[in-house]
Amino acid sequence: MTALAAAPAGHAADPITVILLILGTAAGYAVSLYLWPLRTCTRCHGTRVSPGGARRFHSCKRCHGTGRIRRIGATAVHRFYWSALGDQHRERRRAKLARRRQHAGPPEP
Image 1: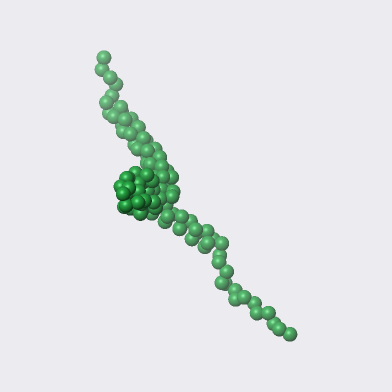
Image 2: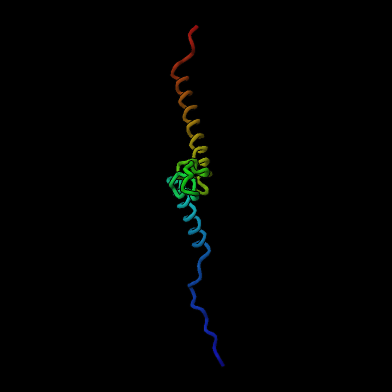
């Protein structure tokens, strides 16, 4: 005659809370990718020379001698940002040209 203890109510994770936490984490990671798109090269560890013997002093082939490589997802974030910014820039330029045409009046013969 053992009684099973019921789990205390209210300790389960709410699905909406979990989804919001995942979206917040993804947004934070996307912002960090935009602000800091590069990381230390994993092959040369930022030394800029290829790993190997003591007599090999060539530029690292992975980072091309810079010591830095792009983080995963940084290219996608920057392409999305610049495509959206490019559309806004194009619209502003079209509006500016339309205003100039209105103020210029008809061309004189």
